[in-house]
Amino acid sequence: MAGDIVPIELGLTDGNVFTLWAPRWREGDDEWEAFLGLDEDLYGFPGVAELAAYIRNDDDNDLAEHPAWPTVVGLQADELVPDDRHSYDLVGVPELAAEDPTPEVIAELEDALEIVRILGEVCELTVITKFFNGNPILGAVTTGTRNFTGRDGVDLWVRIGRLIAKHWDDVVDAIDDVITTPDVDKAAVATAEAELEAAASAEDEDEPADDDLELVEGANDENAADETDDEDVEDDSDLDDVDDDDFWANVGIDPIKIVTDDGEYLSLRCYLGDDPVFLGKSGKIFVFASTRALGRFLADSNDHDLADVSTFEEVRTAATDGSLEFDVISDNVYVLPGLAADIADGPRRMDRNQLDLAVELLTDAADYADDDSVAEALGSTTPLGWFVDYAISPDPKRMAPSPPFDNESEAWRALVHDFENRLVKKS
Image (cartoon, rainbow, N blue to C red):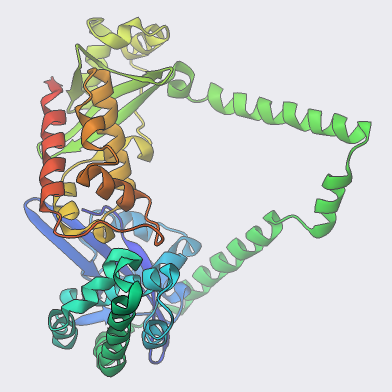
């Protein structure tokens, strides 16, 4: 499951277009994947400003029901600029496939083929689905460089290049045919363009000038040292000001949110040295379906492991007087549903951040319970450990895990099942 909507750039016959892609997400028992569009039309815009203007003024599209749509509507225009990883030069794919199979070329080709395959599935483009279904050797690109070494590997790469050269025009034409550009409000476009210009200007201002760099490198007299010391003091003071305003940072305990198939739950966690300690006891983690229930428990009970933390009394006092608020930062939100299904689909379909956070949670919970099973299951020598490490930190120079991934998916399900058994729901 992916929890985000991603801006992407597609290089097509008539130029580059900008749109949005929602990687696979789960809604109840159903899984969905979609692009910005409506029915059979895929919406593509000539610039980011036009994309931003449309998003802010029109919700008659297939992504409007996505859980992240309200967040996307509130983004600044510069936040809708696709990153390099989500910019796909589709018309340049034949030339790419004609290059030598270096790790960088293979990785770029894999990304392009993957987004086209998804476009074919989501938009029901028969030309594209037949291209992939009828040419399974294209799957060799997904496993890194190992398939393209030696004489046989070079031959395979040449066959893939010839296959792409023969059929790719039809593939791109099929995407061109479904691209539609809706009308957008000119005033909204102008507003978005101003935001993009302001963001670009701010970025330029943040970059030090060459003269400034030379001055810093040459500043070795006493005055320069004194100025540096003063700046350090000021920086420390600024940090102190921030910490003073952050209750949870001061007490060293974090509210966390855990999303399971059964619902969303709140709890607390801190670290004593490197050791995680949860709001719980004897390896069990207490979770709460509402902030009211959690606050009431913290005010009334000391029968848990966090009661031994020196700053917990401040938490209990705030819970008692009603001033305690539970603002969970994004790095402490753990979404577990759908990850097993995504693992079965392979590392290229994973939401890396979501998987990384889930690994953190499962590992912390096991460490809290003095249980080595998660560390062993995610060890570098296990198929699941290799898969997770590659999915979180992909590297085209490393050998990619090979499908099928059913065993890795089942191993992950077992870890999540064991974790959920550690949860004690309090009311």
